[in-house]
Image (cartoon, rainbow, N blue to C red; front, side, top):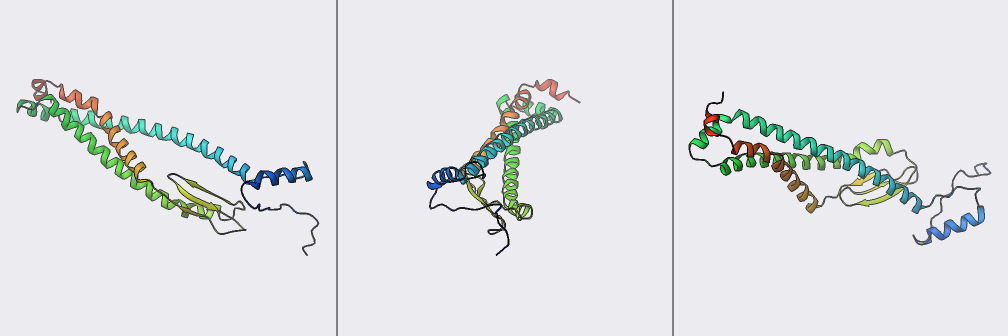
Length: 211
């Protein structure tokens, strides 16, 4: 009907996932190396490899970001201690003990972690819901069809000229969100521990004379 004597590609749908390997071996036995066979299991393996590499890359970026965030929080706390040296001296002169000053600055660091963690979670959720709209245009013309599930990212599916458009449904785990929030607060407290301890050890006489 089309006037063509050959095909550029043939799509074969098996009766089940277990028949994938058998059908691939059967086709190789018939056609040998004259055709290139790409099974769903091979595509899954390729996608898994790419996903693993992306996970390592994102993990490295997250680690660097956490380090930078810790340094930034520590720097903010150091500046706060220096700017409030006289206040620390007055508090100690009024009877505040070292542990009271320590608790005061650690509470300030915890507030920074709470605000930063909340903003980070809200931003992450917003970006996750924005992903489908960003990828629809770039992947709408793709001829590859695939589907998968993720623990935090949710489910996604793409199809080109043989199916519907790209779709993505974010799925969020309350346990993971809570863990991320606690981690942000914990990181802030750890980063602010040394500046707070330095403030608690400050001599009140020297602090009151500070200009």
